[in-house]
Length: 177
Image 1 (cartoon, rainbow, N blue to C red):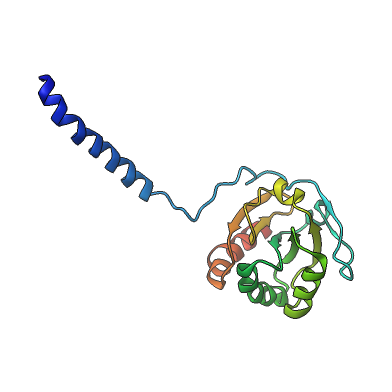
Image 2 (tube, rainbow, N blue to C red; image 1 turned 60 degrees about the horizontal axis):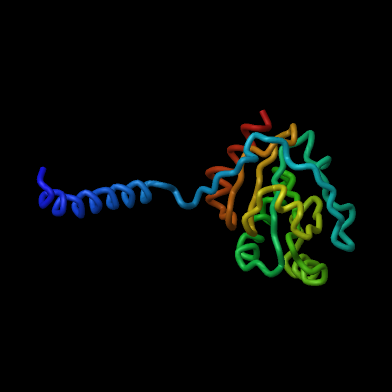
């Protein structure tokens, strides 16, 4: 191919390569955030309680039963949206739900729980360190933890009833067998 032929072919080849990259990128599910902690033991921690909600929450609370760990904060609008779903689930006593109050002011968290109700078996107040250990990108995030204290699933964003029905509760049932 002559030099003149390459001058015309090069932009076409670059365009085709760019389009192939875009096409591949569109195939990636952007709602799934990978977690290196899946199938790994939950991080070890011991969080203090919110005042009036003693005791706090620690990694020891997670062994012996399947449970959900939900990170939330009073300043988090999506957390407010998922709260009725968690409250309804807690009322069924189907699975224990533990809360990590993430980077929140105590007074605001207490007012939030008083206004919306407390679906959590235990709540731990986190300054951010435990959230980092869990690989939290932001709130809300919910983890399914098996009887051995291993993280089996991570849900990023607010839970919906459809998320519970299609993913969370079937996984809880499978892990309880």
